[in-house]
Length: 220
Image (cartoon, rainbow, N blue to C red; front, side, top):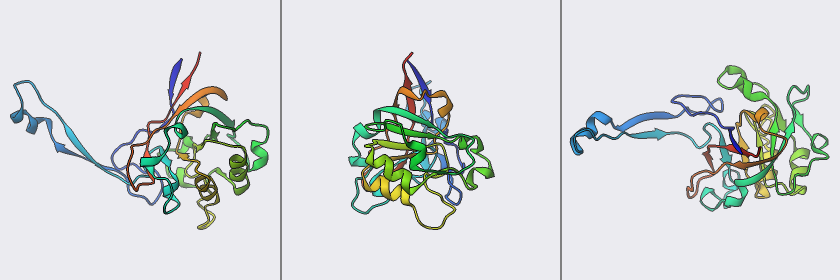
C-alpha cells in the first residue's frame, strides 16, 4: 500500500477561509531557555498555537452546526478512520453546484465521498475565496439517503458561501450525523475506489471543528 496526504500544511498567519484569522504560532519554551533544566546536550522546544478550529484541512462535527449535536469528543472513530473512499471527479465543470444528478450511479453507502473539484489549485491565493464549487441541497439530500459516512471537498466551503446565509449542505449532512471534511488537496492522486480515508481530529469537548492530517491508504 501507499499513503497519500490530502491535507494542507498549517503555517503561521495562513488564510484558510477568508475573513477568519490565521494561526499564531509562537514559542512557549525555546531550546536555548530549556538547556538550564536538563543535562548538557539535552534541549527541548515547546510551542504554542492559537487558531480557530476552521484552519487548514478540518473536520466539521454536528456540534459545529447544531447546539447539542455530537462534538469532537464523541465523534465516532468509524466515521473518520478507515472509511472506504469514493472519489467523484468534478474538476473543470462549468457549473459550480454539485447536484444529485452529478452523483447518480455512485455507491455511497458506508463510504467517504470525496468531491474532487480541483479548486485546491487556488489555495494560498486570493482566488481561493472566489465563488467556488459546492454541494447543493439536492446533492446533500441524495448523499444522506444513499447512506454516506462522510463527505469531503477540496474547495473553500461545501456550501455556496456567496449565496447569503443559507448553508443547506452543512445543515443536511451534519443534521444526519455525517461529518464534513473541507479544504482537501491532492485528490487527483487518490483512485476513484479502493482507498481508505483517515481524518481523525483531536477529542475536544464542546468543540465542533478541528484540523486533521487527512490521508488515503491506497492498495497497490
